[in-house]
Length: 357
Image (cartoon, rainbow, N blue to C red):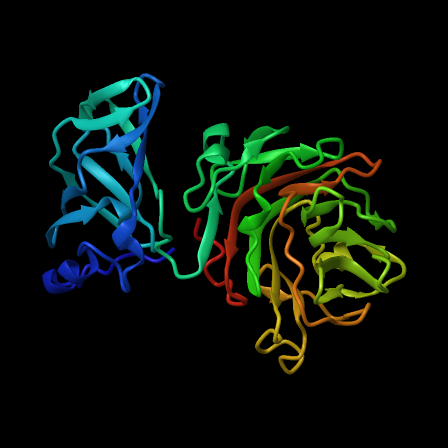
């Protein structure tokens, strides 16, 4: 986790906490607040305030809501712990009266003494270049209200301990337990990243999607994007396999006899792992002399070592179906816990930030 240096000068604070970020992306952001109250209540609404005044040991600043991720209140309801959208952290004292919100049941004013935590949900823009979807998957409210991009639909599953707070667990009979509009998957380049944990899977990896982690497909079932474990994906790939329609397929290696440990390059099969499906129409920079168009990364490292099935030049993006988690139910037992889903409109390959929510 990055932390704001205590050598941070007041002039630098003014630059960081100005009304916009670098570029004009944040200028149009219309954030809303999700308040968790000390009595267990949860209120969502559009705030009247545009900034939050915080006094630290080295500076007094008005932080724009669009730059705030979460504010947690201390026991004295004056001390606050601020997580910013860019990953920085602040500790200070808040000087703020009752927060006024426009909600579905009218205007509400909530005193600071009643608030345990509040999250800022961005209604437009991204705050991070190329980030088109960010969903924390930690609750039904999280699924419905993405931090960035359109909200999802909860079709199945249960919320359990995740990589960051809570995550959603889907068993093999809960196909497409969480879905989003297929248009959220970008082209011609992109990246889908998330954390996942396999629960109660056998050592041996059979042929066929076992399981399919994510997929984007049209209503006729034709898949545009797939990330799945498979001993043989039908294109001569094996291990952790990917398919991006119109471009290429890929696998950890060639089809054959596989285990989950070998597919992950890790003996911690039942542990948390960070997955990323990356694609680029003109080739992914740095992957096999930049001539490969599809690749999978696990825990920040390139997992793909084989590309069977040929290549194409035109990405086929689904338009009338869905993008979702756990794309193939299969017949086996076991479940998958998902957390912190992000989609980017560029072929991201640096995942050094994966441990930041």
